[in-house]
Length: 95
Length: 497
Image (cartoon, rainbow over all chains, first blue to last red; front, side, top):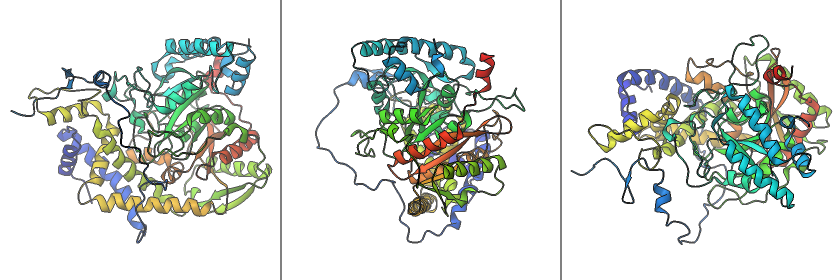
Protein backbone atom coordinates (compact mmCIF):
# COMPACT_ATOMS: atom_id res chain seq x y z
CA UNK A 1 0.00 0.00 0.00
CA UNK A 2 1.16 3.51 -0.50
CA UNK A 3 -0.33 6.81 0.52
CA UNK A 4 -0.56 9.27 -2.39
CA UNK A 5 -1.41 12.93 -2.09
CA UNK A 6 -5.10 12.33 -2.63
CA UNK A 7 -5.14 9.77 0.19
CA UNK A 8 -3.38 12.26 2.48
CA UNK A 9 -6.06 14.85 1.61
CA UNK A 10 -8.84 12.34 2.29
CA UNK A 11 -7.37 11.21 5.63
CA UNK A 12 -6.71 14.83 6.67
CA UNK A 13 -10.34 15.62 5.89
CA UNK A 14 -11.47 12.68 8.07
CA UNK A 15 -9.16 13.93 10.86
CA UNK A 16 -10.40 17.53 10.41
CA UNK A 17 -6.94 18.99 9.86
CA UNK A 18 -6.58 21.61 7.12
CA UNK A 19 -3.74 20.62 4.82
CA UNK A 20 -2.19 22.59 1.96
CA UNK A 21 -0.97 20.85 -1.20
CA UNK A 22 2.62 21.46 -0.13
CA UNK A 23 1.94 19.85 3.29
CA UNK A 24 0.24 16.89 1.64
CA UNK A 25 3.25 16.32 -0.59
CA UNK A 26 5.68 16.20 2.38
CA UNK A 27 3.27 14.12 4.49
CA UNK A 28 2.83 11.58 1.71
CA UNK A 29 6.57 10.79 1.79
CA UNK A 30 6.75 10.67 5.60
CA UNK A 31 3.63 8.57 6.02
CA UNK A 32 4.82 6.10 3.39
CA UNK A 33 8.07 5.61 5.30
CA UNK A 34 6.16 4.92 8.49
CA UNK A 35 3.77 2.61 6.67
CA UNK A 36 6.54 0.58 5.06
CA UNK A 37 8.01 0.03 8.55
CA UNK A 38 4.57 -1.02 9.84
CA UNK A 39 4.14 -3.48 6.99
CA UNK A 40 6.92 -5.66 8.41
CA UNK A 41 4.13 -6.94 10.67
CA UNK A 42 2.96 -9.04 7.72
CA UNK A 43 5.94 -11.33 8.38
CA UNK A 44 4.34 -12.43 11.68
CA UNK A 45 1.98 -15.40 11.71
CA UNK A 46 -1.08 -14.42 13.72
CA UNK A 47 -3.59 -17.07 12.69
CA UNK A 48 -5.89 -17.88 15.59
CA UNK A 49 -4.48 -15.09 17.80
CA UNK A 50 -7.12 -12.90 19.44
CA UNK A 51 -6.51 -9.15 19.04
CA UNK A 52 -5.42 -7.68 22.40
CA UNK A 53 -7.40 -4.73 23.71
CA UNK A 54 -6.02 -4.37 27.21
CA UNK A 55 -3.08 -5.86 29.09
CA UNK A 56 -5.28 -6.14 32.16
CA UNK A 57 -7.63 -9.07 32.11
CA UNK A 58 -10.59 -7.71 33.98
CA UNK A 59 -14.23 -6.95 33.41
CA UNK A 60 -15.17 -3.36 32.89
CA UNK A 61 -16.20 -2.15 36.32
CA UNK A 62 -19.78 -0.95 36.65
CA UNK A 63 -21.06 1.47 39.26
CA UNK A 64 -24.57 2.24 40.46
CA UNK A 65 -26.45 4.30 37.89
CA UNK A 66 -26.86 7.46 39.91
CA UNK A 67 -25.84 11.09 39.63
CA UNK A 68 -22.55 11.60 41.49
CA UNK A 69 -21.32 14.80 39.88
CA UNK A 70 -22.51 17.85 38.02
CA UNK A 71 -24.31 21.14 38.63
CA UNK A 72 -21.27 23.20 37.72
CA UNK A 73 -22.01 24.87 34.37
CA UNK A 74 -19.83 27.89 35.14
CA UNK A 75 -16.81 25.71 35.90
CA UNK A 76 -17.31 23.71 32.72
CA UNK A 77 -17.74 26.82 30.59
CA UNK A 78 -14.74 28.54 32.20
CA UNK A 79 -12.37 27.16 29.54
CA UNK A 80 -14.56 27.77 26.48
CA UNK A 81 -13.07 30.01 23.79
CA UNK A 82 -16.55 31.40 23.11
CA UNK A 83 -19.68 31.17 25.27
CA UNK A 84 -23.02 32.93 25.71
CA UNK A 85 -25.91 32.60 28.15
CA UNK A 86 -24.64 29.33 29.62
CA UNK A 87 -23.87 27.70 26.25
CA UNK A 88 -20.82 26.89 24.13
CA UNK A 89 -20.94 28.96 20.94
CA UNK A 90 -20.13 27.41 17.55
CA UNK A 91 -20.33 28.91 14.05
CA UNK A 92 -23.84 28.88 12.58
CA UNK A 93 -24.76 25.36 11.42
CA UNK A 94 -28.44 25.91 10.40
CA UNK A 95 -29.40 28.54 7.85
CA UNK B 1 24.33 24.79 55.89
CA UNK B 2 24.55 21.80 53.54
CA UNK B 3 23.77 22.34 49.89
CA UNK B 4 20.04 21.66 49.98
CA UNK B 5 19.74 20.96 46.24
CA UNK B 6 22.20 18.07 46.37
CA UNK B 7 20.22 16.07 48.95
CA UNK B 8 18.19 13.00 48.07
CA UNK B 9 14.49 13.02 48.92
CA UNK B 10 15.15 10.59 51.78
CA UNK B 11 17.86 12.87 53.21
CA UNK B 12 15.62 15.93 52.82
CA UNK B 13 12.72 14.23 54.64
CA UNK B 14 15.09 13.27 57.49
CA UNK B 15 16.45 16.83 57.65
CA UNK B 16 12.96 18.30 57.74
CA UNK B 17 11.92 15.96 60.53
CA UNK B 18 15.00 16.83 62.55
CA UNK B 19 14.37 20.53 61.87
CA UNK B 20 17.84 20.96 60.31
CA UNK B 21 16.07 23.21 57.79
CA UNK B 22 12.51 24.17 56.92
CA UNK B 23 10.39 23.28 53.91
CA UNK B 24 10.47 26.95 53.01
CA UNK B 25 14.30 26.96 52.99
CA UNK B 26 14.35 23.77 50.91
CA UNK B 27 11.88 25.23 48.41
CA UNK B 28 13.70 28.59 48.22
CA UNK B 29 16.97 26.77 47.46
CA UNK B 30 15.30 24.96 44.56
CA UNK B 31 13.62 28.11 43.27
CA UNK B 32 17.02 29.84 43.26
CA UNK B 33 18.58 26.89 41.41
CA UNK B 34 15.66 26.86 38.94
CA UNK B 35 16.14 30.56 38.20
CA UNK B 36 19.83 29.98 37.56
CA UNK B 37 19.05 27.12 35.16
CA UNK B 38 16.37 28.84 33.06
CA UNK B 39 18.47 28.33 29.90
CA UNK B 40 17.67 24.59 30.13
CA UNK B 41 13.96 25.46 29.54
CA UNK B 42 12.76 22.74 31.93
CA UNK B 43 9.51 24.48 32.81
CA UNK B 44 6.69 25.65 30.57
CA UNK B 45 5.09 27.35 33.57
CA UNK B 46 6.98 28.21 36.76
CA UNK B 47 4.76 28.05 39.85
CA UNK B 48 7.18 29.47 42.41
CA UNK B 49 4.61 31.45 44.41
CA UNK B 50 2.39 28.39 44.56
CA UNK B 51 5.42 26.42 45.80
CA UNK B 52 6.16 29.02 48.50
CA UNK B 53 2.57 28.76 49.73
CA UNK B 54 2.72 24.94 49.77
CA UNK B 55 6.07 25.02 51.59
CA UNK B 56 4.64 27.31 54.26
CA UNK B 57 1.73 24.92 54.78
CA UNK B 58 4.21 22.07 54.96
CA UNK B 59 6.18 23.84 57.69
CA UNK B 60 2.96 24.21 59.66
CA UNK B 61 2.35 20.47 59.35
CA UNK B 62 5.87 19.67 60.55
CA UNK B 63 5.35 22.03 63.50
CA UNK B 64 2.17 20.19 64.50
CA UNK B 65 3.53 16.68 63.80
CA UNK B 66 1.17 15.94 60.90
CA UNK B 67 3.71 15.69 58.05
CA UNK B 68 2.92 13.37 55.12
CA UNK B 69 5.02 10.93 53.11
CA UNK B 70 6.50 13.63 50.81
CA UNK B 71 5.96 16.66 53.01
CA UNK B 72 7.97 19.65 51.86
CA UNK B 73 9.68 17.91 48.93
CA UNK B 74 9.93 20.23 45.90
CA UNK B 75 9.10 18.47 42.63
CA UNK B 76 8.46 19.22 38.95
CA UNK B 77 5.11 18.16 37.45
CA UNK B 78 5.05 17.07 33.82
CA UNK B 79 2.76 19.50 32.02
CA UNK B 80 0.55 16.62 30.94
CA UNK B 81 -1.00 16.38 34.42
CA UNK B 82 -4.05 18.60 34.88
CA UNK B 83 -3.50 20.91 37.84
CA UNK B 84 -6.55 22.78 39.06
CA UNK B 85 -6.42 26.47 38.17
CA UNK B 86 -2.84 26.23 36.85
CA UNK B 87 -2.11 26.36 33.11
CA UNK B 88 -1.76 22.87 31.61
CA UNK B 89 -0.59 22.79 27.99
CA UNK B 90 0.65 19.27 27.06
CA UNK B 91 3.37 21.38 25.32
CA UNK B 92 0.81 22.14 22.60
CA UNK B 93 -0.31 25.45 21.22
CA UNK B 94 -3.84 24.04 21.11
CA UNK B 95 -4.02 24.11 24.94
CA UNK B 96 -2.23 27.40 25.56
CA UNK B 97 -3.97 29.17 28.44
CA UNK B 98 -5.98 26.09 29.46
CA UNK B 99 -6.58 26.14 33.22
CA UNK B 100 -8.19 22.83 34.18
CA UNK B 101 -11.13 23.12 36.55
CA UNK B 102 -10.03 19.86 38.22
CA UNK B 103 -6.93 18.07 39.52
CA UNK B 104 -5.44 14.84 38.16
CA UNK B 105 -5.63 12.00 40.67
CA UNK B 106 -1.86 11.40 40.75
CA UNK B 107 -0.92 15.06 41.32
CA UNK B 108 -3.70 15.22 43.93
CA UNK B 109 -2.22 12.18 45.70
CA UNK B 110 1.19 13.85 45.84
CA UNK B 111 -0.21 17.13 47.19
CA UNK B 112 -2.18 15.13 49.79
CA UNK B 113 1.20 13.76 50.90
CA UNK B 114 2.73 17.24 51.11
CA UNK B 115 4.71 17.54 47.85
CA UNK B 116 5.58 21.08 46.73
CA UNK B 117 5.19 21.89 43.00
CA UNK B 118 7.89 24.17 41.50
CA UNK B 119 6.52 24.20 37.98
CA UNK B 120 4.93 22.42 35.05
CA UNK B 121 7.69 20.59 33.22
CA UNK B 122 8.29 20.81 29.48
CA UNK B 123 7.70 17.74 27.29
CA UNK B 124 7.24 16.65 23.70
CA UNK B 125 3.89 17.87 22.38
CA UNK B 126 1.18 15.56 23.77
CA UNK B 127 4.07 13.28 24.91
CA UNK B 128 4.81 12.36 21.29
CA UNK B 129 8.57 12.31 20.84
CA UNK B 130 11.88 10.99 22.12
CA UNK B 131 13.93 14.18 22.32
CA UNK B 132 11.72 16.95 23.72
CA UNK B 133 12.11 18.81 20.42
CA UNK B 134 8.41 18.73 19.44
CA UNK B 135 7.29 21.05 22.27
CA UNK B 136 5.53 24.23 21.16
CA UNK B 137 7.37 25.93 24.06
CA UNK B 138 10.93 25.28 22.88
CA UNK B 139 13.53 22.54 23.29
CA UNK B 140 14.74 21.35 26.67
CA UNK B 141 18.53 21.21 26.98
CA UNK B 142 20.20 18.28 28.71
CA UNK B 143 22.42 19.48 31.60
CA UNK B 144 25.04 16.92 30.47
CA UNK B 145 27.53 17.76 27.73
CA UNK B 146 29.78 15.54 25.68
CA UNK B 147 33.48 15.92 26.57
CA UNK B 148 34.37 15.51 22.89
CA UNK B 149 31.99 18.25 21.73
CA UNK B 150 31.26 20.42 24.77
CA UNK B 151 29.64 23.18 22.70
CA UNK B 152 26.89 20.97 21.34
CA UNK B 153 23.55 21.14 23.11
CA UNK B 154 22.16 17.66 23.74
CA UNK B 155 18.56 16.51 24.00
CA UNK B 156 17.30 15.29 27.41
CA UNK B 157 15.32 12.51 25.74
CA UNK B 158 11.58 12.47 25.67
CA UNK B 159 8.82 12.78 26.05
CA UNK B 160 9.31 13.66 29.74
CA UNK B 161 12.44 15.74 28.93
CA UNK B 162 11.79 18.73 31.20
CA UNK B 163 11.12 16.45 34.18
CA UNK B 164 14.31 14.44 33.66
CA UNK B 165 16.51 17.48 32.99
CA UNK B 166 15.16 19.27 36.09
CA UNK B 167 16.02 16.34 38.37
CA UNK B 168 19.47 15.87 36.77
CA UNK B 169 20.23 19.61 37.05
CA UNK B 170 19.34 19.54 40.77
CA UNK B 171 16.58 22.12 40.36
CA UNK B 172 13.90 19.63 41.53
CA UNK B 173 14.31 16.67 43.92
CA UNK B 174 11.95 14.49 41.92
CA UNK B 175 9.47 14.76 39.10
CA UNK B 176 6.47 13.12 37.54
CA UNK B 177 6.55 11.68 34.06
CA UNK B 178 4.37 9.56 31.86
CA UNK B 179 5.52 6.62 29.77
CA UNK B 180 3.67 5.40 26.67
CA UNK B 181 6.58 3.81 24.80
CA UNK B 182 9.60 4.82 26.88
CA UNK B 183 8.92 8.43 27.84
CA UNK B 184 10.16 7.96 31.43
CA UNK B 185 12.90 5.37 30.94
CA UNK B 186 14.68 6.86 27.91
CA UNK B 187 14.99 10.43 29.33
CA UNK B 188 16.09 8.96 32.68
CA UNK B 189 18.91 7.17 30.82
CA UNK B 190 19.87 10.28 28.79
CA UNK B 191 20.00 12.46 31.92
CA UNK B 192 21.78 10.03 34.27
CA UNK B 193 18.92 9.59 36.75
CA UNK B 194 16.42 6.90 37.75
CA UNK B 195 12.83 6.58 36.56
CA UNK B 196 10.16 3.90 36.74
CA UNK B 197 7.11 3.15 34.63
CA UNK B 198 4.97 0.97 36.89
CA UNK B 199 2.60 -1.75 35.68
CA UNK B 200 -0.26 -0.51 33.51
CA UNK B 201 -3.16 0.12 35.91
CA UNK B 202 -0.96 0.90 38.94
CA UNK B 203 -1.41 4.70 38.75
CA UNK B 204 -4.64 6.42 37.81
CA UNK B 205 -4.75 8.04 34.40
CA UNK B 206 -7.58 10.38 35.48
CA UNK B 207 -6.64 13.96 34.64
CA UNK B 208 -3.51 13.04 32.72
CA UNK B 209 -3.98 14.31 29.17
CA UNK B 210 -4.45 11.16 27.08
CA UNK B 211 -2.12 10.08 24.27
CA UNK B 212 -2.62 6.29 23.87
CA UNK B 213 -4.92 5.12 26.63
CA UNK B 214 -4.03 1.40 26.54
CA UNK B 215 -0.33 2.28 27.06
CA UNK B 216 -0.11 5.57 29.02
CA UNK B 217 1.14 5.15 32.57
CA UNK B 218 2.36 7.66 35.17
CA UNK B 219 5.62 7.25 37.04
CA UNK B 220 8.35 9.17 38.89
CA UNK B 221 11.91 10.40 38.29
CA UNK B 222 14.46 10.85 41.05
CA UNK B 223 18.20 10.57 41.62
CA UNK B 224 18.07 7.32 43.61
CA UNK B 225 16.09 4.10 43.45
CA UNK B 226 14.78 4.64 46.97
CA UNK B 227 13.55 8.15 46.11
CA UNK B 228 11.66 6.72 43.11
CA UNK B 229 10.09 4.17 45.45
CA UNK B 230 8.91 6.92 47.83
CA UNK B 231 7.41 8.94 44.98
CA UNK B 232 5.67 5.94 43.43
CA UNK B 233 4.12 4.98 46.75
CA UNK B 234 2.44 8.37 46.84
CA UNK B 235 1.39 8.35 43.16
CA UNK B 236 0.01 4.80 42.94
CA UNK B 237 -3.38 3.52 44.04
CA UNK B 238 -6.86 2.58 42.96
CA UNK B 239 -9.06 5.27 41.50
CA UNK B 240 -12.70 4.61 40.59
CA UNK B 241 -12.45 7.52 38.11
CA UNK B 242 -10.15 5.42 35.86
CA UNK B 243 -11.81 2.20 34.68
CA UNK B 244 -8.39 0.60 34.02
CA UNK B 245 -7.07 1.43 37.48
CA UNK B 246 -6.43 -1.75 39.45
CA UNK B 247 -7.71 -2.21 43.00
CA UNK B 248 -4.68 -3.59 44.84
CA UNK B 249 -2.99 -2.31 47.98
CA UNK B 250 0.08 -0.09 47.48
CA UNK B 251 3.14 -1.56 49.21
CA UNK B 252 5.80 0.50 50.96
CA UNK B 253 8.10 0.15 47.97
CA UNK B 254 11.15 1.69 49.66
CA UNK B 255 11.38 -1.34 51.96
CA UNK B 256 12.38 -3.46 48.97
CA UNK B 257 15.41 -1.27 48.26
CA UNK B 258 18.49 -2.75 49.91
CA UNK B 259 17.09 -6.28 50.15
CA UNK B 260 19.39 -9.07 49.01
CA UNK B 261 19.12 -10.34 45.43
CA UNK B 262 20.66 -13.68 46.34
CA UNK B 263 18.98 -16.31 44.19
CA UNK B 264 16.98 -13.74 42.21
CA UNK B 265 16.72 -14.92 38.61
CA UNK B 266 17.76 -12.19 36.18
CA UNK B 267 16.81 -12.89 32.56
CA UNK B 268 18.96 -11.64 29.69
CA UNK B 269 16.92 -11.58 26.46
CA UNK B 270 19.06 -12.40 23.45
CA UNK B 271 16.89 -10.43 21.02
CA UNK B 272 18.01 -7.15 22.60
CA UNK B 273 21.52 -7.78 21.27
CA UNK B 274 20.56 -6.20 17.94
CA UNK B 275 22.79 -6.15 14.92
CA UNK B 276 24.89 -3.01 14.62
CA UNK B 277 24.28 -2.09 18.26
CA UNK B 278 26.47 0.55 19.91
CA UNK B 279 29.44 -1.36 21.43
CA UNK B 280 29.52 0.93 24.48
CA UNK B 281 25.92 0.04 25.25
CA UNK B 282 26.62 -3.68 24.86
CA UNK B 283 29.69 -3.42 27.13
CA UNK B 284 27.62 -1.62 29.77
CA UNK B 285 24.97 -4.31 29.55
CA UNK B 286 27.61 -7.03 30.11
CA UNK B 287 28.93 -5.03 33.05
CA UNK B 288 25.43 -4.82 34.52
CA UNK B 289 24.95 -8.57 34.16
CA UNK B 290 28.27 -9.16 35.96
CA UNK B 291 27.25 -6.78 38.76
CA UNK B 292 23.99 -8.64 39.33
CA UNK B 293 25.82 -11.95 39.34
CA UNK B 294 28.38 -10.65 41.86
CA UNK B 295 25.48 -9.50 44.06
CA UNK B 296 24.23 -13.08 44.18
CA UNK B 297 21.67 -13.16 41.39
CA UNK B 298 21.37 -16.08 39.01
CA UNK B 299 21.68 -15.12 35.33
CA UNK B 300 19.31 -16.86 32.91
CA UNK B 301 19.29 -16.62 29.12
CA UNK B 302 15.79 -15.99 27.83
CA UNK B 303 14.12 -15.31 24.51
CA UNK B 304 11.48 -12.72 23.57
CA UNK B 305 11.05 -13.73 19.93
CA UNK B 306 8.66 -10.95 18.85
CA UNK B 307 10.87 -8.11 20.12
CA UNK B 308 11.73 -6.95 16.61
CA UNK B 309 8.05 -6.31 15.85
CA UNK B 310 7.26 -4.22 18.93
CA UNK B 311 8.16 -0.89 17.33
CA UNK B 312 5.92 -1.57 14.31
CA UNK B 313 3.07 -2.68 16.56
CA UNK B 314 3.46 0.47 18.61
CA UNK B 315 3.32 2.73 15.56
CA UNK B 316 -0.09 1.32 14.67
CA UNK B 317 -1.70 1.13 18.11
CA UNK B 318 -0.36 4.38 19.63
CA UNK B 319 -1.33 6.58 16.62
CA UNK B 320 -4.72 4.84 16.36
CA UNK B 321 -5.50 5.65 19.98
CA UNK B 322 -4.01 9.14 19.63
CA UNK B 323 -6.19 10.00 16.63
CA UNK B 324 -9.24 9.04 18.66
CA UNK B 325 -8.15 10.77 21.90
CA UNK B 326 -7.14 14.01 20.17
CA UNK B 327 -10.49 14.33 18.39
CA UNK B 328 -11.64 16.28 21.45
CA UNK B 329 -9.55 19.34 20.47
CA UNK B 330 -12.20 20.99 18.36
CA UNK B 331 -12.04 24.64 19.38
CA UNK B 332 -15.41 24.48 21.13
CA UNK B 333 -15.02 23.51 24.78
CA UNK B 334 -11.45 24.49 25.66
CA UNK B 335 -8.18 25.59 24.14
CA UNK B 336 -7.40 27.36 20.90
CA UNK B 337 -10.04 28.38 18.37
CA UNK B 338 -9.43 29.68 14.86
CA UNK B 339 -12.50 31.32 13.40
CA UNK B 340 -12.73 31.45 9.62
CA UNK B 341 -14.33 34.15 7.50
CA UNK B 342 -17.11 32.06 6.05
CA UNK B 343 -18.09 30.77 9.46
CA UNK B 344 -18.60 27.09 8.56
CA UNK B 345 -18.29 24.67 11.53
CA UNK B 346 -16.09 22.14 9.72
CA UNK B 347 -13.82 24.95 8.49
CA UNK B 348 -13.46 26.12 12.09
CA UNK B 349 -12.47 22.59 13.22
CA UNK B 350 -9.95 22.20 10.40
CA UNK B 351 -8.40 25.64 10.87
CA UNK B 352 -8.19 25.21 14.66
CA UNK B 353 -6.53 21.80 14.46
CA UNK B 354 -4.13 22.91 11.74
CA UNK B 355 -3.05 25.96 13.73
CA UNK B 356 -2.96 24.18 17.11
CA UNK B 357 -1.14 20.91 16.44
CA UNK B 358 2.56 20.58 15.59
CA UNK B 359 4.03 18.45 12.82
CA UNK B 360 4.67 15.23 14.77
CA UNK B 361 1.20 15.28 16.35
CA UNK B 362 -0.41 15.78 12.93
CA UNK B 363 1.61 12.88 11.47
CA UNK B 364 0.45 10.56 14.22
CA UNK B 365 -3.18 11.65 13.95
CA UNK B 366 -3.07 11.01 10.20
CA UNK B 367 -1.39 7.59 10.52
CA UNK B 368 -3.92 6.68 13.21
CA UNK B 369 -6.87 7.86 11.14
CA UNK B 370 -5.53 5.88 8.18
CA UNK B 371 -5.04 2.57 10.03
CA UNK B 372 -8.51 2.88 11.57
CA UNK B 373 -10.27 3.83 8.34
CA UNK B 374 -12.63 1.48 6.52
CA UNK B 375 -10.73 -1.10 4.50
CA UNK B 376 -7.51 -0.88 6.53
CA UNK B 377 -8.79 -1.55 10.05
CA UNK B 378 -8.25 -5.28 9.88
CA UNK B 379 -5.02 -5.22 7.86
CA UNK B 380 -3.29 -2.75 10.17
CA UNK B 381 -5.09 -2.19 13.47
CA UNK B 382 -6.30 -5.72 14.17
CA UNK B 383 -3.04 -7.17 12.85
CA UNK B 384 -1.10 -5.00 15.31
CA UNK B 385 -3.39 -5.99 18.18
CA UNK B 386 -2.73 -9.66 17.38
CA UNK B 387 1.04 -9.14 17.36
CA UNK B 388 0.68 -7.24 20.64
CA UNK B 389 -0.79 -10.37 22.18
CA UNK B 390 2.26 -12.36 20.99
CA UNK B 391 4.63 -9.76 22.49
CA UNK B 392 2.76 -10.01 25.80
CA UNK B 393 2.91 -13.82 25.63
CA UNK B 394 6.71 -13.62 25.11
CA UNK B 395 7.05 -11.84 28.46
CA UNK B 396 4.74 -14.28 30.24
CA UNK B 397 6.83 -17.18 28.90
CA UNK B 398 10.13 -15.52 29.85
CA UNK B 399 8.87 -14.88 33.39
CA UNK B 400 8.43 -18.63 33.84
CA UNK B 401 12.23 -18.77 33.89
CA UNK B 402 13.20 -15.51 35.60
CA UNK B 403 12.01 -12.83 38.04
CA UNK B 404 13.26 -9.74 36.23
CA UNK B 405 14.81 -8.91 32.87
CA UNK B 406 17.94 -6.78 32.44
CA UNK B 407 18.43 -4.86 29.17
CA UNK B 408 19.86 -1.58 27.91
CA UNK B 409 17.43 1.36 28.17
CA UNK B 410 18.31 3.20 24.95
CA UNK B 411 20.40 2.30 21.91
CA UNK B 412 22.68 5.37 22.25
CA UNK B 413 23.65 8.06 24.77
CA UNK B 414 21.98 11.50 24.46
CA UNK B 415 22.36 12.97 20.96
CA UNK B 416 22.59 16.59 19.82
CA UNK B 417 19.51 18.73 19.24
CA UNK B 418 18.68 18.45 15.53
CA UNK B 419 20.13 14.97 15.10
CA UNK B 420 17.88 12.04 14.12
CA UNK B 421 15.37 14.34 12.49
CA UNK B 422 15.95 13.51 8.81
CA UNK B 423 13.08 11.06 8.92
CA UNK B 424 10.48 10.33 11.63
CA UNK B 425 11.37 6.61 11.65
CA UNK B 426 14.99 7.35 12.67
CA UNK B 427 13.71 9.11 15.78
CA UNK B 428 11.27 6.28 16.52
CA UNK B 429 14.19 3.79 16.74
CA UNK B 430 15.23 5.40 20.05
CA UNK B 431 12.53 3.45 21.80
CA UNK B 432 13.28 -0.08 20.53
CA UNK B 433 14.30 -1.34 23.99
CA UNK B 434 11.50 0.35 25.95
CA UNK B 435 8.49 -0.25 23.71
CA UNK B 436 8.13 -4.04 24.16
CA UNK B 437 7.42 -3.74 27.91
CA UNK B 438 4.98 -0.91 27.17
CA UNK B 439 3.07 -3.11 24.74
CA UNK B 440 2.90 -5.83 27.43
CA UNK B 441 2.08 -3.41 30.29
CA UNK B 442 5.04 -4.63 32.38
CA UNK B 443 6.81 -2.40 34.93
CA UNK B 444 10.23 -1.07 33.91
CA UNK B 445 12.89 1.03 35.57
CA UNK B 446 15.96 2.75 34.15
CA UNK B 447 18.96 3.66 36.26
CA UNK B 448 22.40 5.09 35.43
CA UNK B 449 25.14 2.45 35.43
CA UNK B 450 28.09 4.05 33.65
CA UNK B 451 29.47 6.76 31.38
CA UNK B 452 30.24 6.71 27.67
CA UNK B 453 33.77 7.50 26.45
CA UNK B 454 32.51 11.07 25.93
CA UNK B 455 31.39 11.31 29.55
CA UNK B 456 27.66 10.90 28.93
CA UNK B 457 25.45 8.81 31.22
CA UNK B 458 24.27 5.37 30.08
CA UNK B 459 21.35 3.53 31.63
CA UNK B 460 20.18 -0.03 32.04
CA UNK B 461 16.58 -1.16 32.26
CA UNK B 462 15.09 -3.68 34.69
CA UNK B 463 11.70 -5.11 33.73
CA UNK B 464 9.44 -6.98 36.14
CA UNK B 465 6.31 -9.07 36.31
CA UNK B 466 2.94 -7.32 36.49
CA UNK B 467 2.47 -5.59 39.86
CA UNK B 468 5.84 -6.83 41.13
CA UNK B 469 7.40 -3.39 41.34
CA UNK B 470 8.95 -4.42 44.66
CA UNK B 471 11.10 -7.01 42.87
CA UNK B 472 12.15 -4.35 40.36
CA UNK B 473 13.09 -1.98 43.19
CA UNK B 474 15.03 -4.75 44.95
CA UNK B 475 17.01 -5.57 41.79
CA UNK B 476 17.51 -1.89 40.96
CA UNK B 477 18.76 -1.22 44.48
CA UNK B 478 21.42 -3.90 44.09
CA UNK B 479 22.48 -2.65 40.66
CA UNK B 480 22.60 0.95 41.90
CA UNK B 481 24.85 -0.06 44.79
CA UNK B 482 27.21 -1.99 42.51
CA UNK B 483 27.32 0.71 39.81
CA UNK B 484 27.93 3.47 42.37
CA UNK B 485 27.13 6.15 39.79
CA UNK B 486 28.33 9.47 41.24
CA UNK B 487 29.09 11.50 38.11
CA UNK B 488 27.51 14.94 37.86
CA UNK B 489 26.41 16.88 34.78
CA UNK B 490 29.23 19.18 33.63
CA UNK B 491 27.05 22.28 34.10
CA UNK B 492 26.94 21.55 37.85
CA UNK B 493 30.68 20.94 38.05
CA UNK B 494 31.33 24.28 36.27
CA UNK B 495 29.29 25.98 38.95
CA UNK B 496 31.16 24.26 41.76
CA UNK B 497 34.55 25.12 40.24
